[in-house]
Image (tube, rainbow, N blue to C red; front, side, top):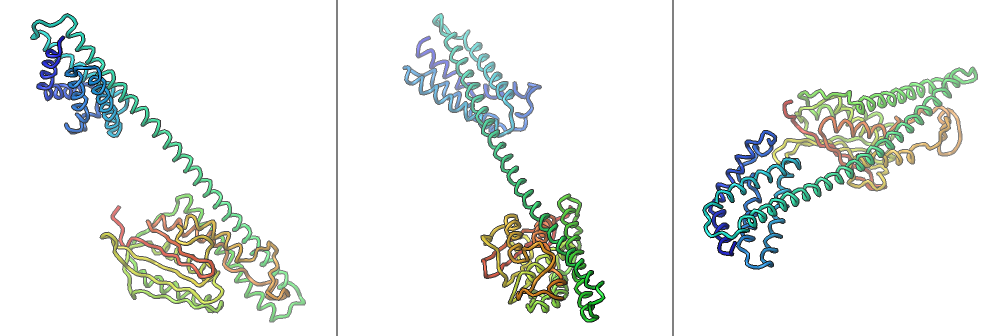
Length: 431
């Protein structure tokens, strides 16, 4: 077949391009084993195939081996991109191969219909054209399959990486949970130790009545602290088990927070601290009153516990972000701050806060608590511990924020206090 005859065949196929593509689309649509293609628009379905046919056109018109080689390379590149396109549209490899098979049959039909109209054809003319077509479709299948396999491998690597990251995160969460539980056990043991010491003193006939009155008051405080700790453990367990459900109702967040601050004023005064609250007098929101109170209570209580001088500020405000109505609760203190926690998310701060709390609270596991002078007495043996479990409190806050679709940010500098900011939706979309 001469260059002129190959060029004539190329002209014929080019003139029939739209018909060829339409016949291919109809053949694919009629294949009961293929369903993905029906979801694609015509332009998406044809994708890089016209460019592949352009490369085949160049092969037929090429006058020397170099031109044929260049056209064949372009053909493979376009076929590879077609495989990438099909991957992104959810095709499996079998579907891609069947599409190429239908394209090959459509082009063969065109060659058969064209062949009888050729006069003076050389003996090997049409077989040469068919071999070129077979090479076209073979290369297309191979390149599509190779690109598909490459993408499968990359996806598998990505899944392995995601799995490794998930395992790492689970390991960290497990370590945090273990640390929290160890701390809780330590606090429970200390509380029981204090209660036992107080009970012994109350049962001692040599203890005078004024001392017994003080012991009794401290006993009540110790029991209350232990009850709070055990209740927090129960809440955390329910949250981690997914048993807590949010109860969204209209409420005034400002009123809730002011009442909470009022309830902590005596606790702050006993520690020589100020507790100030500031914000609009009314802040109507949709929220879960009980869980909002839990979040605020844990954060305010922790701030008061670990602040030695100065005090705690509680503020609230409403704002809008990209058309979404939101509101924020901010608790700032003048306490010791967290090590290496500036601007860190709470997920990373829980472990640090637990370690920080151990440094701030009494590290000894002995049940007797001594004052700064090292002497012991009523205030040493019987002094009730602070409300325990900062690690538990922060873990509860984190879980509750997840439950309420809230974000939690922490800014802290060692020696200069900490700022917790909770941002919540002001209104939730209807379920």
